[in-house]
Length: 298
Image 1 (cartoon, helix red, strand yellow):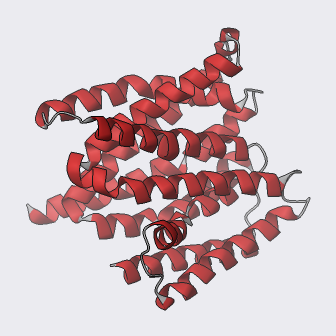
Image 2 (spheres, one colour; image 1 turned 90 degrees about the vertical axis):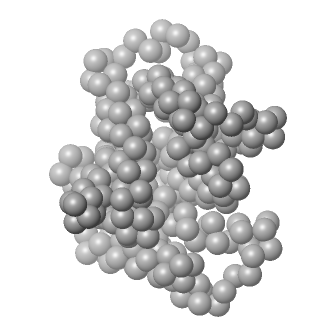
Image 3 (cartoon, helix red, strand yellow; image 1 turned 180 degrees about the vertical axis):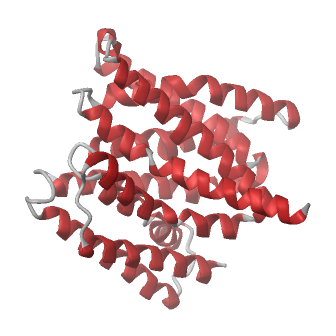
């Protein structure tokens, strides 16, 4: 029975990594139909909102502790940084860079959590982390250099990198701030409420910036928005949560390092993105750096 539980936990973790890896693919495919980032994000969040509301109601029934004003304020900040702003900047950046490069930049978030914790929480930055962090940024430099070649990517690659780096920084800030709330309210409750707030912010942004008629899109755009909501948002959150319960956070995080490689592979298959040796070397360095950081922190 224990082996079956562990096997299913590993399967859920792998499937969760696969689902997360498809997000950038869905975005890039939707952009081919001329949809803008604000409308696409509104579709994704709009389709996901009912599921997050249901998740929040379910977890609140199991954990009836009322939310204080401080809790609500922190959940608002977490929804703003971790799910809304990070998603919006990521969607903007994907206009200019490949799905593979986007995934690699997003994957360096552990290095930013370490740096932010040192700056704002006064946690010492161990010298042992210098090498893995250097590997991460060397890998990104190689990948960016690959995509700066006009033969491999379009214009404004650096702008796209800056936008996606901003997304990564926003998500890292969310992770740094969420520690105490997760201990108090539980990971599922935090994710459900913060995600709900992010969905509402995304819909409000669309209402301010775009006419309602923008929601009239080809059925393919709506299908991709729904796929992003279910396959790359709601489902992987649940899969990773189950995997962590069954095999622990460490093994689940290790399996998550498949993400960049999967996105590079999917980008090659579904988007026709180039698959070069330098790009693969860069991905290897980033993954190695993240794994080393995970070991040092553990």
